[in-house]
Length: 126
Image (tube, rainbow, N blue to C red; front, side):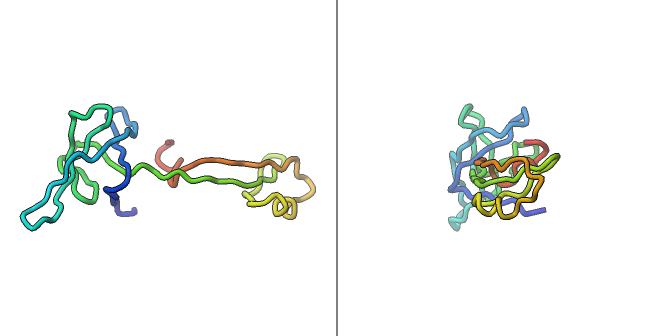
């Protein structure tokens, strides 16, 4: 499993008690005597009085506090897909490439434009 890291300069989300990712913000930074960051305080935007503390890597200081992550960056998948009876092909960036790769039983060639984020669908159904 990949080590969790948080980019504290990017937007944040916290996993609430209902199991939803909700908008959060960094409201404080704590330093030791040498000026090194020891922890961050984070709150839900919708309920800013509830604050939670996290180590610099994003792990909660207290057991039971909510998980935190950076807001996933949206990506875009654009292209063309050949459709066949019972299945479809890979995404081609240009229609001419989809046409070249097509076989006789193709029933359609459709354009797609989908917004997604990395890891989508791999997190228990999100």
